[in-house]
Length: 502
Image (cartoon, rainbow, N blue to C red; front, side, top):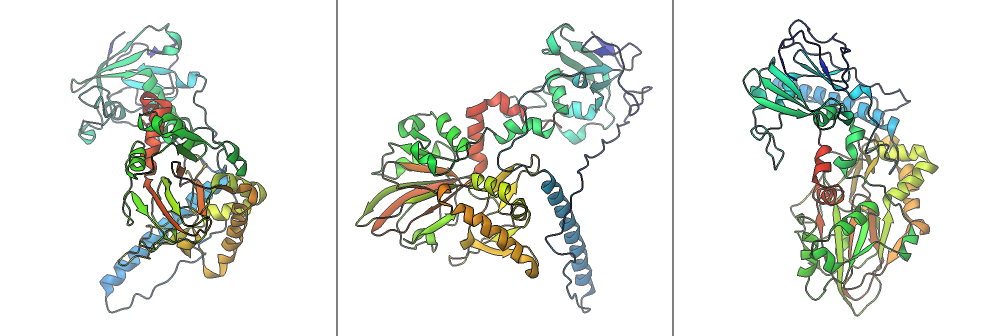
């Protein structure tokens, strides 16, 4: 089937029908005009009672009269800051409305086809259901090798050199109308500038996908297994030889599902074997402590981790805007002493308990921001660009995304001083659940067993010890290891389907 534009011919419908979609947003007399459809109305979030956690009045500053230019600049800065604060509060109100706890992912990998996603082409306009796809988007998303790199999926054309009113010279729907659900059909377009593009109907339908429909592949979501001390009977474990030979799927799946995994059979005579193991997952992250570490309890880096005292359950690097994704420990030796058992707590499991027992406390920890810092080493004071709540949620899905909990590195609480007690009350309840014996999983590490865990989910600690211990390990970035997991779990084609297409 082929048509030139404009045309009075009946439209081509995937299901063979001829019922035209609504044309209220399209100039039917001139389909190549720059007319654009009206923006869809924003989804309304039902109002919920909300009291600003940041106080009802913005702070005031004395600007002085000696420097009116500076005063004006500061005034503009304050207005901008107040605007951003209002936007942040609005996001938090929306988040409170749809918080779903640790793992209630309300998404589906597949959904039944309906007439709403039927692809039709009429007089130079492409419709998916009742939504018109602008020609500028179609041209910008041409899939040919000259416009989109076949291997990297990076755009090659100049998006902003596309004329805003670009029209079709002609178009053609290829494929048999009788093909089941139109799979395999595609739209061929020759644009006014002579460029030829092809659009699989499957790509066009993706424009209607909601964020929830894309989130499985985008975030690498799988059903989570929440655990307590009972996990000690059968902890997730893989063998070193399998991982270093390239069999990563089991390790990565355990890390995503349970939040931790042991790697047994790791050589411990030389820490480089541990480093090689971790580099099979992703690049080792450099911090102010260095990259791959190999240390004893000598306080060389001025952090309590480098002592022999007991450490309560915590997450690391809360002072970074982007905390470390994975953390690894390998006990290489422990001589002339005892103790030093490792503690793991499933932060998502504890968060679920808090949500079930005290929703108000959960919401406080999910909305009130806390600042962290690392200032122990000379010449260093690392602080995130803003505060973050203890329980961070994904803005798109409402699901719990990350736990930030480290009282040692905590700085200020983003509340007026006369309101901070409610944060302490909520944090005290969370802390009590973290210390509940049923939630604490203790394990004595030994040479040859590497512990790797998700620092965004699993809290760790240790008991005090005597003697001399030598431990090596490293951090790995979140995005890097989740990328490796998604490729192993879903495959590249499925992962690319999760990319935003509009």
